Length: 103
Image 1 (cartoon, rainbow, N blue to C red):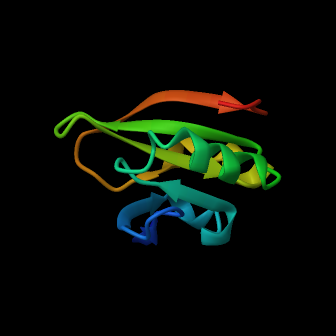
Image 2 (tube, rainbow, N blue to C red; image 1 turned 90 degrees about the horizontal axis):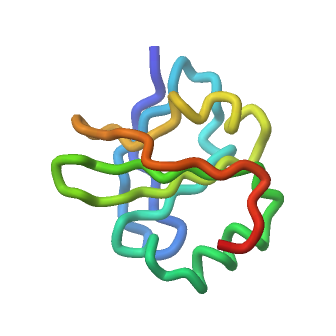
């Protein structure tokens, strides 16, 4: 079983369909940034640097060529990062960063 729900983008509030695998990650353990906001380096850096972020993954919707950022706030969310992604048909992991520095 998986947790399927809509998570708002941390910047603009747009709802993103999300998939959290096997209920292993709580919804409060991640932050989502939508394709419209992911290129706003200033705001994304503020989010990533203002919290105790463990890491983040960039997921690519191959159909629309749009990127989503899923930020892990806990080691548990990071451990389950391969199962915590946008709930889209043609999604692939584009990149991941563990214990980041500024973007």
